[in-house]
Every structure is written in structure tokens, then in C-alpha cells.
Image (tube, rainbow, N blue to C red; front, side, top):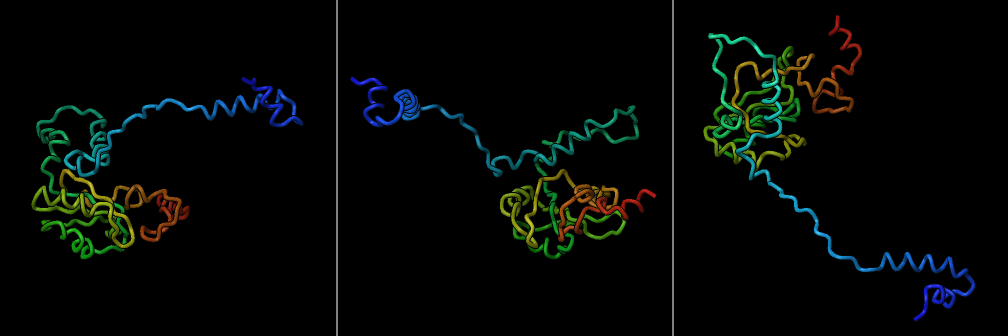
Length: 215
């Protein structure tokens, strides 16, 4: 049997044997078959499998409420609402986000009614201008229709925008208004990218507008 140095000298006599031996050594390492390594198995859960569970959007809202300041008990206040999972177990309302400001109520009704009869549709409005600001609430008569909408309508395009749908605990008066400083949604306040479907740049990125608001 030849050593690596002897093999190297026979292959390329013009090159130093030590240099070739090093390269042959590393070539042997890289070509040696390795044992199969078990890859970690990830349990993927499809959207359909978790439809009855709270979405990340709903959970974030719920956690913010729970972290709110502790107040003294008041007999006139309503009893605490049940946990979010219980409230969504039979939810018939969907929160719909990432809408264009120019998408009409008729367009939304036409799309969402393909999954079931709509009981109520509430457009999200700018708190000051009372114009659409990119979200809405769609309420069905049955929980199953709401789940079907999550499966078949959520993530589809409406007015060239991918819309987002989430189960919602139910609409209450006041939730139709944007909570941003300028009256719209908070997500549109400081956006530094131009979005023609949602009013262009963020309102607070406009120095003139921000100055007027602060005065």
C-alpha cells in the first residue's frame, strides 16, 4: 500500500509531496460517507386545524387587556368576561384587515357572502373623517360559516390586496373607529413605505401634519 506522500509524488511529481498530501487528506475527509443524521421533526399545524383556537392577533389584544392597570372592584362594572378561547369557541364574527381604503362595503359583502349569509357588516372608520380606514367586522349567523370563511376567503386578494381574517369575540360599539393619533389605524401612523391603497405614507411621517396635530 502506498502512503499519501507516495501517491502524491506519483500523481504530480512537479509539486511538493507535503502540499499534495495535505490536499489528499482533506479530499478524503470530504468524500468519506457519513452516517445518516436524524433531522428534528417539526409538527406542522395547518390553519384549518387551529381554526377554533385564538389567532395571534386576538391573543395579543387579550394579553394587552390583561396587563392593564389593576383597578379597585366596582359593583357597577360588568363581571369579567370569560377567557378568550371560550368566547371564540362559538364566535360568528370575523375581523378583516389589510383592506384598501377604497374597497367598498358592496365588494366585501359580495366576497364574504360566498361562505354564508351575512348578519352584519361593520366598516372600520377614521375616527375624525368618518371614512373607511382599512378594516371591517363581518358577522355570520353560524360559527361554521365563520370557519368556512377563514378557510376559503382568508388570505385571498380583494382589490389587489391580500386580506387577513381572524375570529373575533364580537363587535361592540366604538370598535369601528381607528385608534391611531390621526384617527386611522395605528399601523398606518408611522409607515415609511408608500402604500397607495392605504393613504400613501404614514400620517405621522408627514412633518406638516404631525406639527398641526401636536399644536
